[in-house]
Length: 290
Image (cartoon, rainbow, N blue to C red; front, side, top):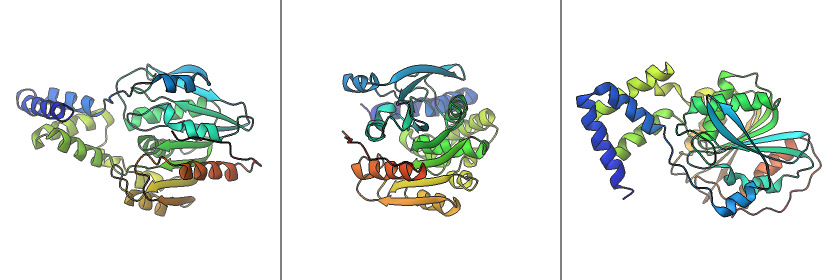
């Protein structure tokens, strides 16, 4: 069924591209930016219940915010596509709550947040608003689309008050997403032409504008990039390119952890970077990546 649905959607968009080109462009673009929400399980709800919970509004959408700890140093986590804040449990458990105030947000269309649409600009607007609302952060951490959106945000707003940035499995080019989308739905060149046109009408730039290598060249914060060499969703070579242009960054390459980078080794690396960057005398707490 999972393979049939994309084919049906693709056939419908290809047909619509002949009948009503503008509608095909709009619907294709909206579908491209529509995540399939991952349900929150009872186990995950129990973890979220350990946090102070609130909501903020970004571009008319209610966004779920979780907060742990009351420490002086602020750390903020931004998840990737079709995920939610539970993906950060091991990292949150590892950080001492007396030294850090830790935040995690469910992106629009994800977890317990409202909406059904997410793009890099939409995520970027949320990131900028939240960082400003909390008065800045010592460290921000992103995974996958969260990483892409962080780089984009700092490219557009270089003065945002953040000292350190951690990128996990960052993608490279928006055009790669478009190609994957075309291949998955088996869209015709005609349908893609109208989707591209709607994209440019919406954001006033072509998809090629969204390039992590270009955005990363402007980063001034101290940074850590973690990427698995066998990542089959966000190719490893993009991490190398980002590292080359981001002068204050360090690249940690892993093997066997895949795109999700689910490993205690990665948790330790993130904790160590946060700890050393903030010059705090801390001991890592026990954590579980399950």
